[in-house]
Amino acid sequence: MGRPAFEPTKEQRDNVRTLSGLGIPQEDMCLLVKDKAGKPISVDTLAKYFADEIKAGVTEANAKIAGRLFKSAMEGNTACMIFWLKTRARWSETPQKVAITDADGKDKPAAATLADLYGIMASVAKPEGAEGAADGGA
Image 1: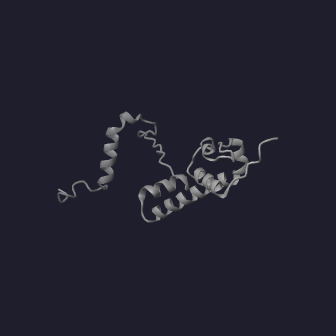
Image 2: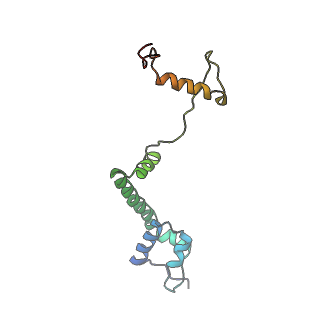
Image 3: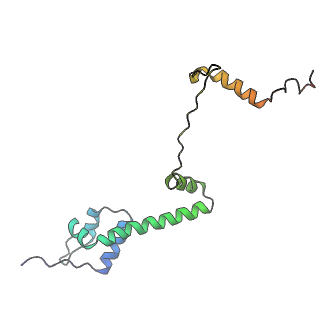
């Protein structure tokens, strides 16, 4: 005579749903779910009898966390806003490439352009024709 068929209880189903949501590996869940003889069930038995609870537990946990993350972002939590935008809106912090060229349009190595950058910054800060404006044009 073979082993009796496993019959999960409501408590076991609830526990598996919770454990799944917490990210507990199935091998570890099996140690906490016992058959009628008091022995841990196998991973195959867990998968067979608790498939819905395993799926639902993960989905419910993700939904709860996403809800709290969204609420925190909407309340002004900057870290949550950034995380949401990076993961959901596909924003990134990938730097943009800027090509620096000389007067002839040839690329210049970045190390050789520091003085040029200071010159550019100075020309942007001082509008054309502003030379001598501070001293009355003298």
